[in-house]
Length: 126
Length: 418
Image 1 (cartoon, rainbow over the protein chains, first blue to last red):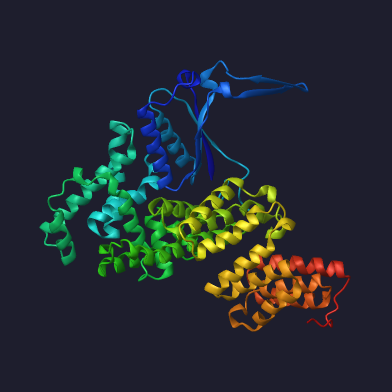
Image 2: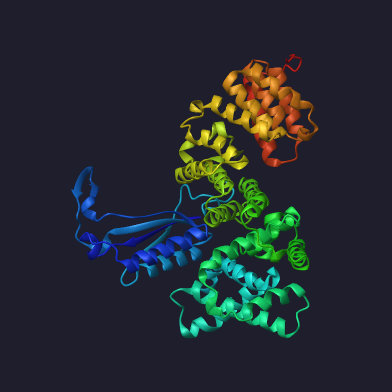
């Protein structure tokens, strides 16, 4: 089963701040752990929202807004795709992802539908 | 909370205890004891920030004190005494965490020891490296739980009694022992592969277990070409799982909706293939290269069949085998036409190893159909259906037969073929 783990950003990163050595070390540890367990599929950080855009569609009208955006903690900062056996296990990886960030962070864990890989929960006889 | 640590940490704890005790059964017990300690202490003291490290420290402590106890009791097994004499002075703190990868690798080679039968190796690997319970292993291997339990227990006993856990393959020995490990992982993958199409959906996600084991192995042996090669083969095969399940049963490669192919797994598979080739390749790498040809084709029509044919030619030169030869024949058909294909495939009809392999007459039926020999094709498909008891295989071939009968407007079984 595939899960998406996302961490929310913060003012430091939105301002273009770089991760400090402690975060680098802990994130490296998380990546190594997840890789050693065979669950890590992909992981990356996202540049600040000033490098991005928002598109909204309402009533048939589309508007595009370039970043940066105001609420740093509503902005995704990094993500990982993992291949876990259950939501319980994925939650634990999410917890470790959060611990790796130290201090303040919000992490969300969501199961992927569609190409969920072998054993995805939308399975069953079809 | 402790439960969610289990599947993640269990193999590491077993490996650490096993490195100290050289006994997989005892090692498993120690790992379980560490979890019991967590269940007892975490509710009161709070969950540690790094539960893995907590569990590992406790595991090593329990294992070392057990080792000392065995010494004091005058260990029955001479080898334990030999090893333990060297370890008496080792404090828990000295067992640096940097060795855990070596410990896990040692456990991998023990679980996949060539002295064990294949079923035993698979069962033990699923247990100690996958953390599967006995009922889960039983469902995986389609045997009663008692059988699965006995299989695991017997394997542990064999290892202990023959002192196999004291082996520590290094360098060239690892290269020699790697094929046995790859075979186990690929067996698990294929058992899962068969299980996901139709009736086996309640089985544990074996293909997923195999993929995780394959990724673990690549992490442990980053320069082993065939570890990357096997992983590439599995990632590329798994990328097609979602497209394989049709409403009427399994969908063959050429008919699959490629929009449903998992592009993340394809990318990972192609990356692993490139790494495998860089490190020297091998049979799994070779098979992955063939799978990659399909993965790169946006449509069935875009498939580079001459390349696949050449890859099969080279593969068969090194690794002869009837099923691969059949696949080579099909590739030659697509690349060079039916005369080339018949030259390869027709002799296989008298190969006893393929006597129950319906895809052989089915392939020939495909060629006959394309050449307009409908009657001959129908005869071959009927032969294919009669050859097998496998529900999924029967379903595929029956559908082909029905389609053929419909379009031909009736069977003309007197048609000569050849």
